[in-house]
Each structure stands twice: as structure tokens, then as C-alpha cells.
Image 1 (cartoon, rainbow, N blue to C red):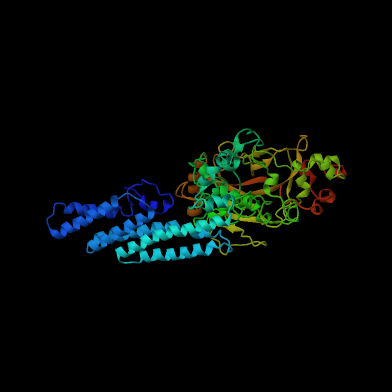
Image 2: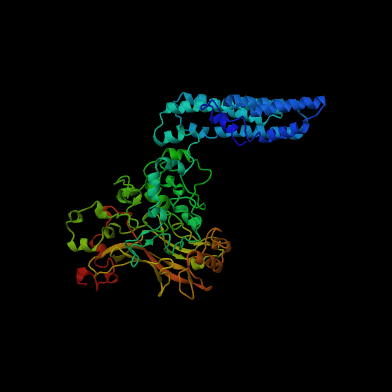
Amino acid sequence: MGRMFLLFAIALACFATAARADLVTDTFDGVEAAVQDRADDLAGTVDKAEAKLLKTYQKVLAMFAAPSVSSATDAKVISKIAGTLAKAAPGDAELMTLLDGAIDAFVTELEAKLASFPRRAAFLSPANKGGPKAQAGYDATTALLGSAKGQALPGVAAKIAGKGEKAVTKTLAALQKALLAEGLTGHAKTFVLDRPNGYTGTSNCLECHADAGADILMTAHWKWTGWSQNVNGHVGEAVGKKNIINNFCIAIPSNEGRCTQCHIGTGWSNASFNFDDATKIDCLICHDTTGTYTKAPTTAGAPPPALDLLPVAAGVGEPGRRNCGFCHFSAGGGDNVKHGDLASSLITPTKAMDVHMGSDGGNLSCHDCHTTTDHKVAGLADEGTAACTNCHTNPAALHPALLPAHLTKIACQTCHIPAFARQLPTKVEWYWADAGQNISPIPTDQYGKATYDKMKGTFVWKKDVAPELMWWDGTWDRMILGVNDQYTSLPADLAKPRGSKADGVSKIYPFKKMIGNQPADAVNHTMLVPHLFGTAGGPNPYWVAYDWDLALEEGAPLAGQTYSGSYEFVDTVMYLAVNHEIAPKASARTCSSCHNGGIDFTKLGYSGDPMTGGK
């Protein structure tokens, strides 16, 4: 008749109605069915003992069919049923086994009702007088339920379980009273006081924030593409992390389960992920304020199963540097690996590290510059611009001694980020061709960083890196999967800023230059996407089989590419904009930092140093 009684036994303790369903529970369904079978077998018997047993069975069946009056009464009836059967048919081994199992299941459901008690009780302050009372009730109740499971006599166990039902209700009521006195507000009140089951997932958030969920589904953070405004030849097209090639972990297709540890959702493990499902949004990764929330490395963005999400959900708030940094500081597979100017050192930086984010400086959060509207973050695709001049609206007034040409030709970052990776080293070279070897011991460099990994190849790390200075008009050439993923010269340019000294709009900006090699099709000169991680993309990921041919055979089609069956490793280069780690004024570039041999102006299209007549 369904799984109702044991759920009603507690859940309806405070919500009893005049007319409820018959007394039923699927933990006792097997017992009820067995009793019915035995009663049917005895029908029409003339044996006095059997007639007596039949009468007992009929009495028990009537108890099962009795209307459910209250949770406490229901528990007593169940106890009576168990006691009656244990007394009437102690030698019926099959029935006693069913009865033992039913009682244990009953107790297990009662224990489940108490499962959230320790997590919710953690929100009680030491001064809360109701806390010790509730805790004492919890301790006594769990001990009582444990004794029921350890009791060999079904009738006795059932009586203990009946008492346990009442004790559970009383214990939860004591906790609720104590929590009410705690004066919880906001999300803590919602998930700790108002919801006995606490936080169960994103669907809870959407009950109040459905509009926010709908907004997020339209963002570049969610889609990993946006309507490009700055990719040459692809303005107005969907371009982003989802479909571009890099020379770090190369590309997303076939590797979703690992790459999407840095997605603001959960469950994106293959190409069938539903980007229209708001329940897949991971609200906690951006809004955790406890510093305890994380995503497991290989679960397609899900948190570790053992992580208690209740305190995280109860303490949600505005995103901070740690929230953004979980993904952006670890891009490329580790702390400061990819960008060089985005590292965990920016979670609690000093002014010397970054004048804007330093706790002794501006103490700004990421969203102070990357302003957000409807969850669209400035600096991504078409979602707004995060520019120095958004705040520093009159740079000429700030630099009265500079020649006007400096402000029209040189970006703020060029002088104010003389070096990046100043606290933690960053990868500047990555050679996939070396992967797959068993090297021991693993070599390390002067920073203590491993320079080899069997899964990924050979690396070069650097610290205090001088940026590459290049003209930039704000647009890029990028290699896009299935669009322009073939190279015509080497090194293959994967991402390169566009601009020149003569175009009248470009300025000199700082960039990180990343070089390396990676697999490509030796016949059609396509930069190939290998299947690296997990079996969603096929049975032979490189990080298991260590066979490039198999990895490319599986990965390329999922990336929309054609693989000829012949591969080679080719040199690649890409550039990444450097915008963080703004140095204090005293550490900014001076005249001699650039002129009189400070930089090579011929790389910028000059005949020589403009200070000495270069044109």
C-alpha cells in the first residue's frame, strides 16, 4: 500500500488530520502480506489450534487496516502487531525474520529523522539554554534506537521502537525550540530553522531566486561562450572556453568531467549536458562565505560527497576573491598555472602584491571592477568592460608629468604591472610531446615546482616575469574548433592580440607569452583535441592508456574534427592579457625602465628608441 506510515509517524506528529490513510508502512508490507497468506491458508480449517491462530492473524490484519489517528498511536499499533505475532507464532522462522527486518527498517527511518540533528545543533550558541536539553534528548534517543536494533526479541524490540518514535518527535521539538530562541535570520533561518531537512540542493535556492537562475542560464560564465565583440572575423558569434583551443589542457570536448571542475554548474560530464536546466547551477561556488566549499576534481563540478552543505548554504553572501579564485586562480590545472597574474596569493594580498586588492590598500573584491548586472560579469564576452578608466576617469590629472603621447599610446597596465607572477611562479612553457614517460625521481626547479608530469609532459616555470609588450586594439585572433583550427605556419598562433603602431587606435599592453608543443594532424594540419580524461569520451583516455593515437581518435570527432590517423607535435604560442597584480606607485615603470635600453622598441615597430629619434 506504499511507503507512508513510517514517514507519517514523525512528519505528521505536528500536522495530524481528522481523516488519514490506513495504518500502513512498506517496512511492514512484507509482514502484512505474509500474515494475509497465512490467514488464507488457514481459512476453513477445523483444527482448534489453527482456528485460534487464524483468529490472531485476522486481528493483526484488522490492526493494519485501522485508520491512522496520530503518529504516536500508529507507533503503538505497530508495536502491538509485532508483540502479538511474536507471541502467537514464535516458531515461524520466516515470519520472525520478516518481523525483525521490518522493525529494523522502522528504527532506521526514525534514525534518519535525527540525521540532521548534529548539523543543525551546530548553530546553537553556548549561551542557548535549550541546547543542552536538546542534546541530552538526542543522545538518549539515539541510544534507545540502537538498543531496539540490538534486541533479539521482536516483541521487545517493537516496544522500544514505539517509545523511540515518541522520543524522536520530542527531541526534534526541543531542537526546534532552541533554534527558534537563537534568533536565526536570512538563509540560516531558512535552511536551519524552517527546513528540518536543511539544504538539499540548487532547487532550494530557485524557490526564492528563480529569476537569478534564469539570468545565469544566459551568461558566459554558464555557457562558457558569449556573443563575441572582440574576436576577429567572429563578432556576434558564440565564442569562448567551450570552443577555443589553448596550449594548456588544449580543449573541453571529451574532457568535460575534469575541465568542468571550474564550471559554475554540476554534472557537465559530456556533450549531452542540459544548459537549460537551472537546477544544475552551482550557487554555492560563487556565494559561499565560509571558505569551506569546494568541488571535487573529477566529479564534473560536484562537491565532495562528504562535504556538509548546510553551513555553506546557511552562510551564503556576496562573492569574494576566494570564490572567483577557485576557478580563475587554478585555471590550466593548478595555482597560477595559466594567467600568471591570478593566483591564490590574491585571496589575502598585501598592497605590495596588488594595490587594489591588498588588505592594506584598496581591499577591493573582484566584482568591484568586474561589475555585475543580472549575473553578467563585466570583462566577459559582451557582458561589459572592466577598464581602469571606469574608476580612474582622468589619467592625465594623475600623471601631469607624462607627455600626452604616453597616455594615448600606452595602457595603464604597461607601466603599473612591470612584472607578474611576483609571489607564485607560473608556467611559461609546456611540452606535451614529452608526456607518457616513467621518470623517477620527478625533477623540480628552483621554486620547488615539478618540471615533469607523466600525464602532461615537461614544463618551465618562471617568477617575476617581464610581460611581453605588444600593440593591441582590443581585438584578438583566436583558434576556434571546427572554424579555423588549422595552422599554416609555425609556431601555430592559438591566441594573439591584434593591433599596430600605425592604426591610430592601438595601445601598448602587457601580455603573458605561453609557448609549447601539442598534438596536431600531420596530414591536414589541424590542431587536434585529445581525449585526456574519463571514459565518457571513450574507453582510451590518454591519462589511462597513454596512447596518443587512441586519444586523438576518440577526442577529435567529439570536438567536431577529422583525424587522418597520423599525428605529430607542433610548436604553439598564445598570449594572455595581464591585468592584475597592479604594483604600488613606487614600483611602477620609470622612464629608464623603457628608454635607454629598457625595452626593445624595434619589436614594437619602431626603428629605435623614440627618445633618441626612433620612428
